[in-house]
Length: 450
Image (tube, rainbow, N blue to C red; front, side):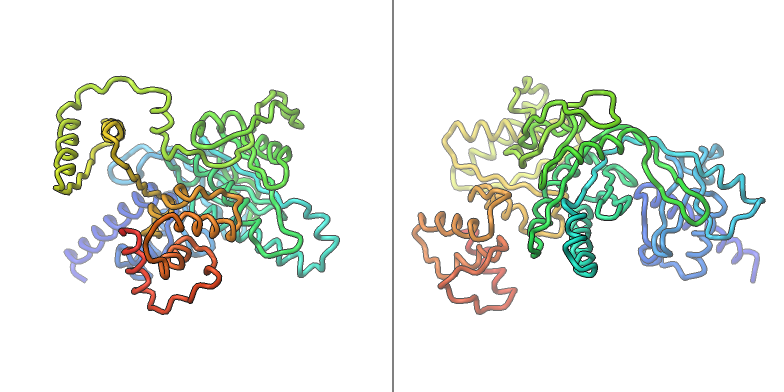
Protein backbone atom coordinates (compact mmCIF):
# COMPACT_ATOMS: atom_id res chain seq x y z
CA UNK A 1 0.00 0.00 0.00
CA UNK A 2 1.45 3.41 -0.98
CA UNK A 3 2.03 6.14 1.57
CA UNK A 4 -0.47 8.43 -0.24
CA UNK A 5 -3.23 5.79 -0.12
CA UNK A 6 -2.57 5.11 3.57
CA UNK A 7 -2.77 8.83 4.32
CA UNK A 8 -6.09 9.08 2.41
CA UNK A 9 -7.56 6.18 4.39
CA UNK A 10 -6.50 7.78 7.67
CA UNK A 11 -8.10 11.06 6.63
CA UNK A 12 -11.33 9.25 5.67
CA UNK A 13 -11.46 7.46 9.01
CA UNK A 14 -10.85 10.67 10.96
CA UNK A 15 -13.54 12.47 8.95
CA UNK A 16 -16.09 9.71 9.58
CA UNK A 17 -15.15 9.58 13.26
CA UNK A 18 -15.74 13.34 13.64
CA UNK A 19 -19.07 13.15 11.82
CA UNK A 20 -20.32 10.19 13.88
CA UNK A 21 -19.19 11.86 17.12
CA UNK A 22 -21.03 15.07 16.23
CA UNK A 23 -24.20 13.20 15.20
CA UNK A 24 -24.17 11.10 18.37
CA UNK A 25 -23.66 14.15 20.55
CA UNK A 26 -26.64 15.89 18.92
CA UNK A 27 -29.05 12.96 19.01
CA UNK A 28 -27.94 11.11 22.12
CA UNK A 29 -28.67 7.66 20.63
CA UNK A 30 -28.13 6.16 17.16
CA UNK A 31 -28.36 2.60 15.89
CA UNK A 32 -25.39 0.90 14.29
CA UNK A 33 -27.54 0.11 11.26
CA UNK A 34 -28.38 3.78 10.70
CA UNK A 35 -24.66 4.68 10.93
CA UNK A 36 -23.79 2.08 8.30
CA UNK A 37 -26.51 3.37 5.97
CA UNK A 38 -25.82 7.07 6.58
CA UNK A 39 -22.04 6.92 6.06
CA UNK A 40 -21.77 3.79 3.86
CA UNK A 41 -19.57 2.05 6.43
CA UNK A 42 -18.36 -1.53 6.22
CA UNK A 43 -18.15 -3.65 9.37
CA UNK A 44 -14.44 -3.02 9.89
CA UNK A 45 -14.72 0.76 9.65
CA UNK A 46 -17.81 0.84 11.89
CA UNK A 47 -16.02 -1.28 14.50
CA UNK A 48 -13.04 1.06 14.44
CA UNK A 49 -15.21 4.15 14.94
CA UNK A 50 -17.19 2.55 17.76
CA UNK A 51 -14.03 1.33 19.53
CA UNK A 52 -12.55 4.81 19.32
CA UNK A 53 -15.64 6.45 20.88
CA UNK A 54 -16.20 3.81 23.59
CA UNK A 55 -12.73 2.63 24.58
CA UNK A 56 -10.41 5.49 23.65
CA UNK A 57 -12.44 8.67 24.11
CA UNK A 58 -14.90 7.21 26.67
CA UNK A 59 -17.80 9.32 25.35
CA UNK A 60 -20.16 6.53 24.27
CA UNK A 61 -21.58 3.22 25.45
CA UNK A 62 -22.98 0.17 23.71
CA UNK A 63 -26.58 -0.87 24.34
CA UNK A 64 -27.54 -4.47 23.50
CA UNK A 65 -25.16 -4.53 20.54
CA UNK A 66 -27.63 -2.45 18.52
CA UNK A 67 -27.48 1.15 19.76
CA UNK A 68 -24.64 3.57 20.43
CA UNK A 69 -25.43 5.93 23.33
CA UNK A 70 -23.71 9.26 24.02
CA UNK A 71 -22.38 9.43 27.58
CA UNK A 72 -20.08 12.42 27.22
CA UNK A 73 -20.60 16.09 27.96
CA UNK A 74 -21.45 18.97 25.65
CA UNK A 75 -17.93 19.81 24.47
CA UNK A 76 -16.86 18.33 21.16
CA UNK A 77 -13.88 16.02 21.53
CA UNK A 78 -11.54 15.81 18.62
CA UNK A 79 -8.98 17.70 16.58
CA UNK A 80 -10.72 21.06 17.15
CA UNK A 81 -10.65 20.80 20.93
CA UNK A 82 -7.68 20.23 23.15
CA UNK A 83 -9.74 20.42 26.35
CA UNK A 84 -11.88 17.44 27.26
CA UNK A 85 -14.55 17.61 29.96
CA UNK A 86 -14.57 14.79 32.51
CA UNK A 87 -16.75 12.06 30.98
CA UNK A 88 -18.60 9.14 32.54
CA UNK A 89 -16.95 5.98 31.26
CA UNK A 90 -18.91 3.37 29.35
CA UNK A 91 -19.83 0.19 31.21
CA UNK A 92 -17.27 -2.54 30.64
CA UNK A 93 -18.39 -5.89 29.28
CA UNK A 94 -15.15 -7.56 30.36
CA UNK A 95 -14.62 -9.21 33.76
CA UNK A 96 -13.36 -6.63 36.23
CA UNK A 97 -10.13 -7.02 38.16
CA UNK A 98 -7.93 -4.93 40.41
CA UNK A 99 -6.38 -3.03 37.49
CA UNK A 100 -9.79 -1.79 36.41
CA UNK A 101 -10.95 -0.54 39.81
CA UNK A 102 -10.11 3.15 39.06
CA UNK A 103 -12.21 2.98 35.87
CA UNK A 104 -15.30 1.83 37.77
CA UNK A 105 -14.78 4.63 40.27
CA UNK A 106 -14.64 7.18 37.46
CA UNK A 107 -18.02 6.02 36.18
CA UNK A 108 -19.66 7.53 39.24
CA UNK A 109 -19.45 10.99 37.61
CA UNK A 110 -22.95 12.09 36.62
CA UNK A 111 -24.61 14.66 34.38
CA UNK A 112 -26.86 17.31 35.90
CA UNK A 113 -30.12 17.72 33.98
CA UNK A 114 -33.59 19.23 34.29
CA UNK A 115 -36.02 16.32 33.87
CA UNK A 116 -39.72 15.65 33.92
CA UNK A 117 -40.13 12.27 35.61
CA UNK A 118 -43.23 10.11 35.26
CA UNK A 119 -44.17 7.13 37.43
CA UNK A 120 -46.85 4.76 36.14
CA UNK A 121 -48.38 2.07 38.34
CA UNK A 122 -50.88 -0.66 37.54
CA UNK A 123 -53.86 -0.41 39.89
CA UNK A 124 -54.71 -3.50 41.94
CA UNK A 125 -51.81 -5.57 40.65
CA UNK A 126 -51.48 -7.53 43.90
CA UNK A 127 -55.14 -8.51 43.81
CA UNK A 128 -54.87 -9.46 40.14
CA UNK A 129 -51.84 -11.65 40.81
CA UNK A 130 -53.82 -13.51 43.47
CA UNK A 131 -56.96 -13.93 41.38
CA UNK A 132 -55.39 -14.92 38.06
CA UNK A 133 -53.26 -17.74 36.82
CA UNK A 134 -49.62 -16.56 36.58
CA UNK A 135 -49.69 -16.80 32.77
CA UNK A 136 -52.86 -14.68 32.55
CA UNK A 137 -51.41 -12.13 34.95
CA UNK A 138 -48.18 -12.03 32.96
CA UNK A 139 -50.11 -11.41 29.74
CA UNK A 140 -51.91 -8.43 31.29
CA UNK A 141 -48.71 -6.86 32.60
CA UNK A 142 -46.99 -7.30 29.21
CA UNK A 143 -49.97 -5.73 27.39
CA UNK A 144 -50.08 -2.81 29.83
CA UNK A 145 -46.34 -2.19 29.48
CA UNK A 146 -46.60 -2.36 25.68
CA UNK A 147 -49.38 0.26 25.71
CA UNK A 148 -47.21 2.54 27.86
CA UNK A 149 -44.17 1.95 25.68
CA UNK A 150 -46.05 2.77 22.46
CA UNK A 151 -47.30 6.14 23.78
CA UNK A 152 -43.98 7.11 25.40
CA UNK A 153 -42.10 6.34 22.17
CA UNK A 154 -44.39 8.61 20.14
CA UNK A 155 -43.64 11.50 22.49
CA UNK A 156 -39.92 10.58 22.48
CA UNK A 157 -39.71 9.90 26.19
CA UNK A 158 -37.27 7.39 27.66
CA UNK A 159 -38.35 4.37 29.70
CA UNK A 160 -35.62 4.09 32.32
CA UNK A 161 -36.92 1.09 34.26
CA UNK A 162 -39.67 -1.49 34.47
CA UNK A 163 -40.26 -1.92 38.18
CA UNK A 164 -42.47 -5.03 38.30
CA UNK A 165 -45.84 -3.60 37.32
CA UNK A 166 -44.51 -0.02 37.48
CA UNK A 167 -42.85 2.02 34.74
CA UNK A 168 -40.32 4.84 35.26
CA UNK A 169 -40.14 7.34 32.38
CA UNK A 170 -37.88 10.34 31.72
CA UNK A 171 -38.73 13.29 29.48
CA UNK A 172 -35.67 15.41 28.74
CA UNK A 173 -33.13 12.59 28.77
CA UNK A 174 -31.20 11.34 26.88
CA UNK A 175 -32.64 13.70 24.27
CA UNK A 176 -34.07 17.06 25.32
CA UNK A 177 -36.97 18.76 23.52
CA UNK A 178 -38.41 22.24 23.72
CA UNK A 179 -41.62 21.06 25.44
CA UNK A 180 -40.68 17.92 27.35
CA UNK A 181 -43.08 18.73 30.18
CA UNK A 182 -45.99 19.11 27.75
CA UNK A 183 -45.00 15.82 26.12
CA UNK A 184 -45.02 14.11 29.51
CA UNK A 185 -48.51 15.31 30.48
CA UNK A 186 -49.97 14.51 27.06
CA UNK A 187 -48.47 11.04 27.11
CA UNK A 188 -49.86 10.49 30.62
CA UNK A 189 -53.40 11.25 29.45
CA UNK A 190 -52.99 9.02 26.41
CA UNK A 191 -51.58 6.15 28.50
CA UNK A 192 -54.70 6.23 30.67
CA UNK A 193 -56.85 5.91 27.54
CA UNK A 194 -54.66 3.26 25.92
CA UNK A 195 -54.60 1.01 28.99
CA UNK A 196 -58.32 1.43 29.54
CA UNK A 197 -58.99 0.23 25.99
CA UNK A 198 -57.17 -3.08 26.50
CA UNK A 199 -59.71 -5.87 26.21
CA UNK A 200 -59.52 -7.39 29.69
CA UNK A 201 -62.10 -8.13 32.35
CA UNK A 202 -61.94 -6.47 34.79
CA UNK A 203 -60.49 -3.52 32.82
CA UNK A 204 -56.96 -2.44 33.67
CA UNK A 205 -56.36 0.94 35.32
CA UNK A 206 -53.26 3.00 36.04
CA UNK A 207 -52.12 5.76 38.36
CA UNK A 208 -49.66 8.34 37.04
CA UNK A 209 -47.56 10.92 38.89
CA UNK A 210 -45.40 13.60 37.20
CA UNK A 211 -42.86 16.01 38.63
CA UNK A 212 -40.24 18.30 37.08
CA UNK A 213 -36.94 19.25 38.68
CA UNK A 214 -33.14 18.87 38.74
CA UNK A 215 -31.48 15.46 38.77
CA UNK A 216 -28.06 13.94 38.25
CA UNK A 217 -28.01 11.20 35.63
CA UNK A 218 -25.29 8.62 36.01
CA UNK A 219 -24.53 4.95 36.26
CA UNK A 220 -25.22 3.06 39.45
CA UNK A 221 -24.39 -0.51 40.33
CA UNK A 222 -21.25 -2.52 39.73
CA UNK A 223 -19.72 -4.76 37.10
CA UNK A 224 -22.30 -6.17 34.72
CA UNK A 225 -25.29 -5.04 36.83
CA UNK A 226 -25.28 -1.32 36.09
CA UNK A 227 -28.08 1.07 35.21
CA UNK A 228 -28.10 4.67 34.05
CA UNK A 229 -30.62 6.43 36.28
CA UNK A 230 -31.63 9.90 37.38
CA UNK A 231 -30.97 10.44 41.09
CA UNK A 232 -32.14 13.21 43.36
CA UNK A 233 -35.35 14.41 44.95
CA UNK A 234 -37.28 14.70 41.67
CA UNK A 235 -37.85 10.95 41.03
CA UNK A 236 -38.78 10.44 44.70
CA UNK A 237 -41.39 13.20 44.55
CA UNK A 238 -42.82 11.81 41.28
CA UNK A 239 -43.20 8.41 42.95
CA UNK A 240 -44.99 9.93 45.94
CA UNK A 241 -47.31 11.93 43.68
CA UNK A 242 -48.19 8.76 41.81
CA UNK A 243 -49.24 7.24 45.13
CA UNK A 244 -51.72 10.12 45.63
CA UNK A 245 -53.41 9.60 42.26
CA UNK A 246 -56.70 7.74 42.03
CA UNK A 247 -57.31 5.06 39.38
CA UNK A 248 -56.99 6.44 35.83
CA UNK A 249 -55.74 9.82 37.01
CA UNK A 250 -52.72 11.89 36.00
CA UNK A 251 -51.54 14.01 38.93
CA UNK A 252 -48.78 16.61 38.53
CA UNK A 253 -46.80 18.82 40.88
CA UNK A 254 -46.94 22.60 41.01
CA UNK A 255 -43.52 22.75 39.31
CA UNK A 256 -44.90 20.82 36.34
CA UNK A 257 -48.18 22.75 36.42
CA UNK A 258 -46.44 26.12 35.98
CA UNK A 259 -44.71 24.80 32.83
CA UNK A 260 -47.92 23.58 31.17
CA UNK A 261 -50.43 26.07 32.59
CA UNK A 262 -53.16 26.96 30.12
CA UNK A 263 -52.63 23.96 27.85
CA UNK A 264 -54.71 21.56 29.97
CA UNK A 265 -57.70 21.62 32.29
CA UNK A 266 -56.88 20.91 35.93
CA UNK A 267 -58.39 20.13 39.31
CA UNK A 268 -56.59 21.50 42.36
CA UNK A 269 -55.84 18.68 44.82
CA UNK A 270 -54.44 20.88 47.57
CA UNK A 271 -51.30 20.07 49.56
CA UNK A 272 -51.54 16.48 50.83
CA UNK A 273 -48.81 15.01 53.01
CA UNK A 274 -46.29 13.13 50.89
CA UNK A 275 -44.43 10.45 52.83
CA UNK A 276 -40.77 11.36 53.25
CA UNK A 277 -41.19 14.81 51.62
CA UNK A 278 -40.77 17.62 54.12
CA UNK A 279 -41.97 20.46 51.87
CA UNK A 280 -45.71 20.83 51.24
CA UNK A 281 -46.43 20.62 47.51
CA UNK A 282 -49.59 21.65 45.70
CA UNK A 283 -50.84 18.90 43.41
CA UNK A 284 -53.11 19.11 40.37
CA UNK A 285 -55.11 16.44 38.60
CA UNK A 286 -54.85 16.89 34.83
CA UNK A 287 -58.40 16.41 33.52
CA UNK A 288 -57.93 16.82 29.76
CA UNK A 289 -56.29 18.97 27.10
CA UNK A 290 -57.49 22.55 26.95
CA UNK A 291 -58.75 24.46 23.95
CA UNK A 292 -55.46 26.29 23.45
CA UNK A 293 -53.44 24.58 20.73
CA UNK A 294 -50.16 26.34 21.43
CA UNK A 295 -48.34 28.20 24.18
CA UNK A 296 -48.74 31.41 22.16
CA UNK A 297 -52.52 31.10 22.33
CA UNK A 298 -52.24 30.87 26.12
CA UNK A 299 -50.20 34.08 26.19
CA UNK A 300 -52.54 35.79 23.72
CA UNK A 301 -55.54 35.22 25.97
CA UNK A 302 -53.80 37.17 28.75
CA UNK A 303 -53.22 40.10 26.41
CA UNK A 304 -50.43 41.02 24.00
CA UNK A 305 -48.22 44.08 23.85
CA UNK A 306 -48.41 46.29 20.71
CA UNK A 307 -46.63 44.91 17.65
CA UNK A 308 -43.57 46.97 16.77
CA UNK A 309 -41.50 46.87 13.59
CA UNK A 310 -43.70 44.52 11.55
CA UNK A 311 -45.97 47.03 9.79
CA UNK A 312 -44.72 46.02 6.33
CA UNK A 313 -45.29 42.31 6.89
CA UNK A 314 -48.72 42.88 8.42
CA UNK A 315 -49.68 45.13 5.54
CA UNK A 316 -48.61 42.43 3.10
CA UNK A 317 -50.84 39.85 4.81
CA UNK A 318 -53.84 42.21 4.72
CA UNK A 319 -53.21 42.93 1.05
CA UNK A 320 -53.26 39.18 0.30
CA UNK A 321 -56.51 38.86 2.23
CA UNK A 322 -58.05 41.65 0.15
CA UNK A 323 -57.09 39.74 -2.99
CA UNK A 324 -58.69 36.57 -1.65
CA UNK A 325 -61.94 38.48 -1.03
CA UNK A 326 -61.91 39.42 -4.74
CA UNK A 327 -61.91 35.67 -5.62
CA UNK A 328 -58.16 35.70 -6.28
CA UNK A 329 -57.05 32.78 -4.09
CA UNK A 330 -53.85 33.31 -2.13
CA UNK A 331 -51.37 31.12 -0.27
CA UNK A 332 -48.79 32.69 2.05
CA UNK A 333 -45.86 30.88 3.67
CA UNK A 334 -44.56 32.77 6.69
CA UNK A 335 -41.14 31.55 7.81
CA UNK A 336 -38.25 32.81 9.89
CA UNK A 337 -36.16 32.32 13.00
CA UNK A 338 -37.91 31.61 16.34
CA UNK A 339 -38.99 34.68 18.28
CA UNK A 340 -39.27 37.21 15.43
CA UNK A 341 -43.07 37.52 15.64
CA UNK A 342 -44.51 34.99 13.16
CA UNK A 343 -47.25 33.76 15.49
CA UNK A 344 -48.08 37.33 16.47
CA UNK A 345 -48.56 38.33 12.83
CA UNK A 346 -50.87 35.39 12.23
CA UNK A 347 -52.85 36.21 15.38
CA UNK A 348 -53.34 39.80 14.22
CA UNK A 349 -54.54 38.65 10.80
CA UNK A 350 -56.96 36.21 12.46
CA UNK A 351 -58.42 39.06 14.52
CA UNK A 352 -58.73 41.26 11.44
CA UNK A 353 -60.44 38.55 9.39
CA UNK A 354 -62.79 37.73 12.28
CA UNK A 355 -63.91 41.35 12.51
CA UNK A 356 -65.05 41.15 8.87
CA UNK A 357 -67.30 38.22 9.63
CA UNK A 358 -65.35 35.61 7.68
CA UNK A 359 -65.42 31.93 8.63
CA UNK A 360 -61.95 30.84 9.69
CA UNK A 361 -60.83 27.21 9.65
CA UNK A 362 -57.49 26.56 11.32
CA UNK A 363 -55.36 23.43 10.94
CA UNK A 364 -52.20 22.74 12.93
CA UNK A 365 -49.51 20.14 12.41
CA UNK A 366 -47.93 18.38 15.38
CA UNK A 367 -44.42 16.95 15.90
CA UNK A 368 -46.07 14.02 17.70
CA UNK A 369 -47.94 12.84 14.57
CA UNK A 370 -45.33 13.14 11.85
CA UNK A 371 -46.37 9.81 10.30
CA UNK A 372 -50.02 10.83 9.91
CA UNK A 373 -50.43 13.04 6.85
CA UNK A 374 -54.07 13.87 7.65
CA UNK A 375 -53.56 14.48 11.37
CA UNK A 376 -54.35 18.26 11.12
CA UNK A 377 -57.70 17.37 9.52
CA UNK A 378 -58.43 14.63 12.07
CA UNK A 379 -57.59 16.98 14.96
CA UNK A 380 -59.86 19.66 13.47
CA UNK A 381 -62.74 17.18 13.16
CA UNK A 382 -62.23 16.07 16.76
CA UNK A 383 -62.69 19.66 17.88
CA UNK A 384 -65.65 20.38 15.59
CA UNK A 385 -67.41 17.18 16.67
CA UNK A 386 -66.54 17.91 20.32
CA UNK A 387 -65.03 14.50 20.98
CA UNK A 388 -64.15 13.95 24.62
CA UNK A 389 -61.30 11.72 25.80
CA UNK A 390 -63.74 9.48 27.68
CA UNK A 391 -66.14 9.09 24.75
CA UNK A 392 -66.56 5.50 23.55
CA UNK A 393 -66.30 4.77 19.80
CA UNK A 394 -70.10 4.38 19.69
CA UNK A 395 -70.62 7.82 21.26
CA UNK A 396 -68.16 9.40 18.82
CA UNK A 397 -69.91 7.75 15.87
CA UNK A 398 -73.26 9.09 17.09
CA UNK A 399 -71.78 12.62 17.27
CA UNK A 400 -70.49 12.27 13.70
CA UNK A 401 -73.89 11.07 12.42
CA UNK A 402 -75.71 13.85 14.24
CA UNK A 403 -73.43 16.51 12.79
CA UNK A 404 -73.61 15.21 9.22
CA UNK A 405 -77.42 15.09 9.36
CA UNK A 406 -77.48 18.89 9.39
CA UNK A 407 -75.97 19.12 5.91
CA UNK A 408 -77.69 18.50 2.59
CA UNK A 409 -75.37 16.40 0.52
CA UNK A 410 -75.23 12.72 -0.45
CA UNK A 411 -74.05 10.75 2.58
CA UNK A 412 -73.93 7.24 1.13
CA UNK A 413 -70.12 7.19 1.31
CA UNK A 414 -69.50 10.32 3.38
CA UNK A 415 -70.38 8.74 6.71
CA UNK A 416 -68.31 5.53 6.31
CA UNK A 417 -65.37 7.47 4.81
CA UNK A 418 -65.20 9.90 7.73
CA UNK A 419 -65.79 7.10 10.24
CA UNK A 420 -62.79 5.25 8.81
CA UNK A 421 -60.69 8.44 8.87
CA UNK A 422 -61.52 8.92 12.55
CA UNK A 423 -60.88 5.23 13.38
CA UNK A 424 -64.52 4.65 14.32
CA UNK A 425 -66.53 1.47 13.78
CA UNK A 426 -68.38 1.05 10.49
CA UNK A 427 -71.90 2.55 10.79
CA UNK A 428 -74.69 0.00 11.14
CA UNK A 429 -76.98 -0.34 8.12
CA UNK A 430 -74.44 1.28 5.77
CA UNK A 431 -72.99 -0.86 2.94
CA UNK A 432 -69.25 -1.50 3.32
CA UNK A 433 -66.87 0.50 1.16
CA UNK A 434 -65.97 -1.45 -1.96
CA UNK A 435 -62.85 0.32 -3.21
CA UNK A 436 -59.07 0.12 -3.13
CA UNK A 437 -57.17 1.94 -0.33
CA UNK A 438 -55.91 4.51 -2.85
CA UNK A 439 -59.41 5.18 -4.17
CA UNK A 440 -60.72 5.42 -0.61
CA UNK A 441 -58.04 7.98 0.21
CA UNK A 442 -58.94 10.04 -2.87
CA UNK A 443 -62.65 10.00 -2.05
CA UNK A 444 -61.92 10.96 1.56
CA UNK A 445 -59.96 14.00 0.38
CA UNK A 446 -62.75 14.94 -2.06
CA UNK A 447 -65.29 14.67 0.75
CA UNK A 448 -63.22 16.90 3.02
CA UNK A 449 -62.79 19.53 0.33
CA UNK A 450 -66.51 19.47 -0.43
